[in-house]
Length: 149
Image (cartoon, rainbow, N blue to C red; front, side, top):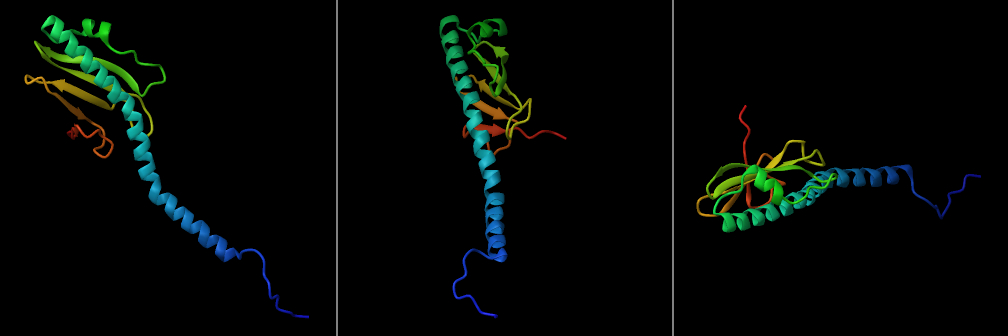
């Protein structure tokens, strides 16, 4: 009674294994891109805080004629929420109308605790950005700082 079935229903084990292999390959290819996009999205919050800080500093310089001191900056700095990607915002290198705002980041997807974005105001009143983050997640206006070994 060996009869061949004319109509087979379902998938063979080999077909299922091929589909699973294809899905695995696609996932492996897209995972790094997905992680990078998540990191870039998280950095938008830090960029927004930097832009707000720059606006506050520009207003302070306009009113007072100098870059704010750390204590003056702490009075005008935007509030950082406890669940934020941003760990701290500090000013440094103040000299007349020049100085820097450093945004230190918390540990998150693609970001290590202590990574930073540093926005510096030069004599021409331009803001320049540098960071120790990987160049593939940096905002367009930022340059990466190579760590010395």
